[in-house]
Image 1 (cartoon, rainbow, N blue to C red):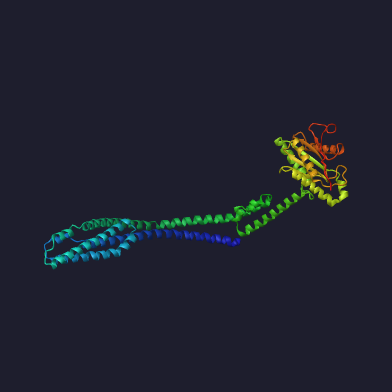
Image 2 (cartoon, helix red, strand yellow; image 1 turned 135 degrees about the horizontal axis):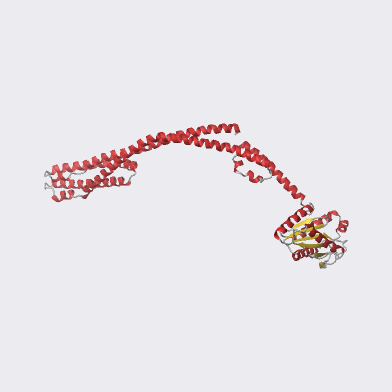
Length: 468
């Protein structure tokens, strides 16, 4: 969606929110009033139904005093049949209204009372029917009705229980009348507060609409400000900027523009990193080059100044490499240098160790936090690995395979010293090894010793190797 359409949509949405809020307020008030009105009608229906049932129950319950009056068996049968029909009619009316009353009320007490009255009505009806059968039998025998039959009918506890439940039903009816009056007052109150609901909804609608408009405008302005910031300082973390919520929630045009810009910045940073890596890596051996060595040397010297830990340096030179090149050619010579670099790299196992090619056949190994004995041991390990590899060197005056000479130096960086002094001591140790002490060995530049007059010489043992 274009920005123009988006701004138009903001205005239309704001007006829609205001309208919906106002209508919602009125609908809420109407719903509240309607809800109370529905409850009032339901309670009125229950009250009227209970009134009708109470009247019917009063008519249907047998009046036991009539059976105590003197009369003929025929009159007694007529009274019994009349009471049975009255109970049967009340039972039919109760069955018709029981479900609707229970559903409308939801009151378990009312349901229990109606069920109890229905069961008691059936019980009294059956008792009267049995009494009528016994009276007809006595009449057929032309005998007087036994007093025990009438006493049993009149002492039926179900009749008393029906009257008691009828009183409970009347109490429930009075409660329903009180509830109907309360709901009527609530309905009037709901109508009076309807206008207040409408005004509240209108005010809330305006507030929400303004907040929505401000939020949408903020989604447009903030990404633009972030884009301006990135353009002024493109060196910031591009990936973090791309994942920011401000850009992710920006309009499509602005988001696309920012993402395109950030993509270009990311590609530029990636190319810069690749160029930097290429600029600091030796293209032949894949170890660091002289530039990487100078940078790492300066960084580790500065770190040693802060930590006070020793910094060791190994300088390795492949013995008589020119003769090797002349005999086997430059292609084989390049392969030889790659193999030597791999041997050195396998010995310098720590992530902080730095292996660099600083000359044609000259390598340097920078060992942070490493004392002189450990550095010397690593130099011997490198020579031993080369001897074990036994790369054939047919023109070597030393032995019949590729060997190396190593100068070792170590220092604890001091503010008064220069990093070049460590480099000079290691280089001078290598020079003395090659010029005065014979190649294929390790020369250690001991601290505070004049290398020109007094050096500890540690010659590597020459292992006999059968050359093929």
